[in-house]
Every structure is written in structure tokens, then in C-alpha cells.
Length: 394
Image 1 (tube, one colour):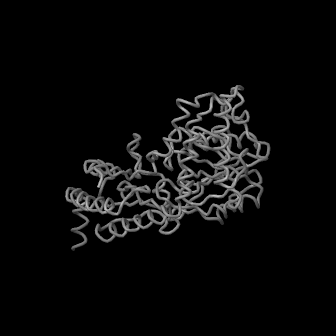
Image 2 (tube, helix red, strand yellow):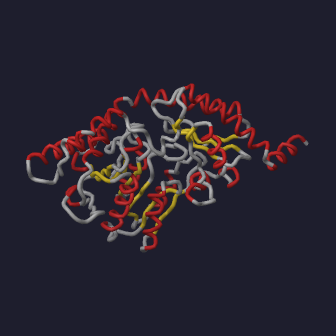
């Protein structure tokens, strides 16, 4: 077993050796700017357009509907701001959910300061929006619905196809943040009625700093970055050719192995959850049990502070993350956990374990063994836990 057990793959993933190998020539051999006119540049341009065509095929899109970006946050920002700008004559109302990634939530908050109205939909205890509430929220001036494909914290997968059907029925554009979903679960923009979709290469064993935005043909969209004519004059700046090649290669590998990886990760995920629930008292598993990303485990341990638990796991060589935003300087617990109805004191004790296609059952068992020991030790020092046990015994 490795000295380091990395279970924070929702944050980022290791770049696969085959991906690095595919990228290397575009640093030292085919290093030309694809926007140049000479034949040497044509090699880089052809490789880039081949990658665009490949990615389009993976999501059921046309190559001209794929725009390369710097990652998921940029794609989210571009999609939402561009729709807001180009459809404001129809209205200034946007619908989203309370559990979106901050790239969506902060963009919506920024638009509110510009005079737009945003409806933030509630979710149920599993993190799923109500389709009935969504439809009721649509108004004549609604221009965009932006609901994530799968939640980055609790792993819940939303009813994306049905959301898209409602959007089409009411002539409203539908954007989905698929950063956690693409290359992990099947995605088809046509079958799922998606108009705009964000993805990021480093979430599926590709390089950081590269992503894409799918924009359905016919949608009016303004540039996010002004300058040159790259990306059909909609995103200026020299192309990150090596990143584009790496992202396409990573997607190719992940999608080819998706069925097997999903089966394996689901099996280990469920084993982790079963052991935690059976062997550690006073825990809560967050997110939907079935409609869930294969590699996501999110658990709250009562009478335990999540950040301290992470530090103690790190001392055992285990990399995980917390639902708490303490690491970003905030003392507030995760907005996602609060949105599914958890009180602050329980939400603060959350830990997210996200698996990769190389995570083993042996590693999962090592994690649970250490969790048991650490949680027991931390609770033994908690006066709240001591009072709880005394009241329980009375």
C-alpha cells in the first residue's frame, strides 16, 4: 500500500502517464502557435481541431459547439454572463440552486448587483431540486436555468434531462456545470436537452488550466476575453495546445474505461460507507444513496470538528477534504450541507472522501480503521459528547 492515500479526487486528480506522453511533443516539437499561417503551425492546429472533434463526439455535440477555456470556473462565468448580456431584452431573471459551486453562485450574486433577479431553488435532504418548484419558478422574463449536473461536495446527481425538458418547454436556456460529472458518468447534450455545459480537464486525470464550454449552435454568446480571433473570436488568447491535447487524451481514456471504473469505485465507495456506518456511531452519510457519483463519500461525524479531523488524517498519510469552508478563512460550514438541512454543529463535522480509479479496498480499510481511532479520540475530549452520553444513559 502507498505511503500516501489520496482521497481528494473531487478537488483534482493525478495526470495519467499516457496523458503526459501525449502532451510532451507540443512543448518541444510541435510548439507552434496554431493561429499562425505557416505549415509548421498547421500541425498544432490540426491536433487541436482533432481534439475538439474528439471531445464533441464524447458529449454528442458538433465540433463548432466546443470552446476551449481555462477550466470550469471560467466556463461557468462565461456561460452565465454571456446569456445575461445577450438575452436581457427578454428579461433579467435567472434560476439556480442553493448548492451550486461558488463559480455559479458568485456569478449570480454579481449579476444581482447589476439589476438581475436570481431565484435560488431549495433542495431536499439528499440535495435534489424539485422539478415542480423549478417549473413554478419560471417567469416570462426568465432567460436561464443553471443547475449543476452533480454536486462537488455530496456527489448527488440532479435530474438533468428532466430539467432540460422543462427549460425547452418554456423556451428558457439551460446551462449545467458538469465539472464533476463529465468523463465519470454518461453525458449527452442532445439527449439531455443541455444548451450550455462546463467541464474541466483536471477532474478526470487531465492537466490543470484547461476546460471547455459547450454552447449549442444558435445561442447568442458574447466574448469573455477580447483580443484576437481565437475560438471563433469569442475567447482571445494563444491556445493552450498541450493542455487541449492532454484533456482530450484524458477524456478518451476515462470514457473508454468509464463502465469498469464506475463499477469498481461504486463497490469501494459502498464498502467505505458500510464500514463507517456499522463501526462508527452517530454518523450521517450526505447525498443521495443511489443517484450519486461513483467515487463520492461525504459523512458527518457528530461531536467532531471536521478541520481537526482532516489534520489528524493527514498525519496518517490520508488526504481528504471537509464540507467546512474553514480552509478558505470562513468559520461557516458548507453551504451545501446547510442547504440539505443540517444544523451548523453537525455540518462542521463533515469529511469528503473522493476515490480515483486506482483506489483499492485495502486503502479504504486503512482509512476506516484510522477514522475509527481518530473519531473516538476526538470525542473523548469533547464535553458535548460527554454530556450527550450521560443524558443518553440517564
